[in-house]
Structure formats: C-alpha cells, structure tokens
Amino acid sequence: MSRKRVPLALAYADARGRYYFDERSEPLADGGIVRAPRPDELIPAPPGSVPTLLPLRRPVSVRGVEARRHALGVLLPAGYTRLLVPAFEADADAPTLPLFGYTFACAIDDELYVAAMRTDRDEDWEPRRFAEGELERLLEERCARDPGNHMLAQLRVCAGEYGCFTAQNVFLARGEAALPVSPKCNARCVGCISEQDPDAGLPSPQTRIAVEMQADEIARVAIEHLERVPEGIVSFGQGCEGEPLLRSHAIAAAIEKVRRARSNGTVNLNTNGSRPRELARCIEAGLQAVRISLNSFREATYAAYYRPQGYGLADVFDSIRVARAAGLRVSLNLLTHPGVTDDVEEVAAMERFLREQPVDMVQTRTLNIDPHRYFALVGRPQATVGMRAAIESIAARGVRVGNFTHVH
Image (cartoon, rainbow, N blue to C red; front, side):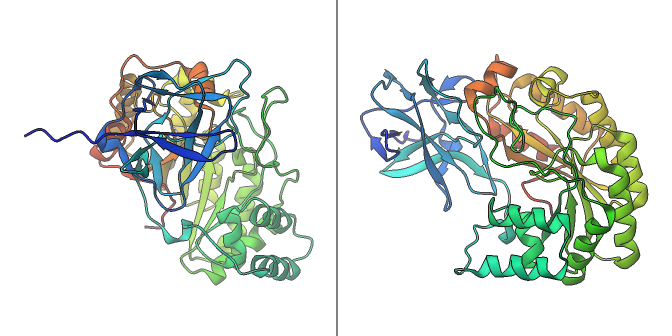
C-alpha cells in the first residue's frame, strides 16, 4: 500500500523577518536541481534552529515565484547536517547573503520543518547559557593568572564577543580547547569567516588574529587545560586564524613543551592539509590527531572554493596519507552543500578516495555561504543522489560520520 503524501505548506517571511505559513502554496527546494523535497529529507525544526529572512529573494513554489514574499532559511544547531537549501529567485539588486548555512524550511500541520538529518550528539556543543556576569568573571580570572599571554587575550575576544565554544572551553576547563596560532593563510576561501576580499560584498563575521603566538605562551595555555581536563583536547587551527601549518616550527616547539609537562589528553590540529612536510614535523613532535578540511574530492571544485596559493588537492591527499601512515587519528572536515556533495560525480570521487584512505571519521559541516554564489563558482550538477545517500555512502565505507572531534 502506498503511503499517503503529507501536504507541505510554504514557509516564508515578511520584510521585518516574521515568518508565516501558506497551506495553499506547496514549496520547492533546491538540491542543485530545484524540486519538491522528499519526506525522508524533512524533520521538525530542532531546538536551537533560527529562522532567517533572505532579503530580496522570492521563494519558489509549484505555482511559480512568490513575488510578494521573502524567502525563508533556517540556521541549524550543531549536530545537524543540511540536506536542501531554499529555492528562491533573487532580485537584481539583492546583496550577497552573509556567511550562514541556509537550510530549506516548510510547514507540516502548522509546524516548522527543515531539510536536515541528525549526524552527531555531544553535550559540550549544546547551546550555552551563562548567568549575568558569569562568563566575564571566568575570562577575567583566567587572564589574570597569565597576564601578557597574547593567546589568552585573543581567546578572551573569541569567547566573549564571538561566542566560540572551543575558546570558551579554555575558561570553562572542559572539552576541546582552542589554540589559534597563525595570522596568515595560503588559501583564499570564498567562505572564509576571518578574512574576506575587499570586493567580496560582505563582511567577515570575525576578525583574524594579528599576532603570531609563540611556543611558550601556546604551551602554557595547553598545559593548564590538560591539567584541569584529564581527557581534554587542545586544538591548533581555529576559525579566527589562517593556516596553522604556516607556523609548524612554533607548533612543534609548543607540542614538545606540552608533552614534557603532560602525557594525558589529545593534541589535535585542524588544517587545510596543504603542507605534508610541515605536518610531518608536527607529528614528530607529538601530534596525535588531525582534522583536514576540504569541500570536494575533485580538483576543480576544490580549487574554485579554496583558491589555494602554492598547493593543490593532491597535497591535501598527501597530508592525509602522511597522517594515516604515522598512526594518527585522522578526520576530514567535509564542507557540505546540497547539489555539490551529493553530485553523482562527487560521490564517486569520494568513494574512490575513502577506499584508498579509510580515515577514522568524516565530520560533515554545513558550508556557510550564499547558495547562488556557491553554485556560480562550482556549477550545478547534472544528477544527484541526495545528501542523505551521500552521507550514508561514507558510513558504508566503514568510516564514522559525525560533526565533532571525539577522543574515542
């Protein structure tokens, strides 16, 4: 017996950002190909979801462009991966959207639904609430114990102004702690959150660090974190910095200092994987885990987004091989986008690489970017398998799928 199709209602916004449902209009979604969403792609909007207006963009429904309405997107909480983006038509004067992960939304039985799937759980990444003045007091107390430490000064900004969880963890003494080290980068990612081109047409959500952190101040922060958190993680390579492998000498020296003082916990590096030899230097010093970022397993798609300077996707693959050969825990930070990640050719390329190099984990990350801007860069697919199938194909290779760095 065929299952009765549940009617979907259009979710849209007005000019003030208030959202509404229209049961008379059935919405379409964009998965690289504009189409109706499938039932297995929709879940009730999870707690922490944020509906957001897409200015000067008109939602698309089965009856055409909804000219007098604004498109609606939803920003997902951590632990969920987006499966579809909103289908919309942009006005000629529509500005580039800020760097957020816009997810398709609709209504079922007068309840907001989103195109997403749960891909990880970790209480350390649940939304945080502090009593009035609590976080400020923790920042002040920790910085007072090590005045003049440039890293703590930066982390204070990241924890307080940007709400960065890994920065806050330094002051809360929990989980994964941030160790930003590099103000420079050898990629010009279109969706970089710390440095945008002057003509990009949108601001950077954060300001990139301006100081090259020194080995001693790095080590002091890491050592105290591991003293207070026996199973803790200390991580180089954060959103407020460039590429940490450009500071491999300082990182290696800091790791050696940490390991002379502490044997517990995990030393992790988040990197674009552009410099295999520098990665090997950090491994020799005692690096235990690495998370390497990429948006694609195809050279042209990778280069269109990362705009690498002096390296290519082959170097990234070499870094993965170097780390696996050395016995590190290796994760991929896969920047996902419907219509790109689930492109038939992309999935085939991903499966070929994971057969050769079955990494420990693929962390799916919803790519924060204007969908139309991204498609203009990398192109739209001829055919897709769907995001859920693409993610399931990773697990079928025996690779763990998630969103967070786990110790075990």
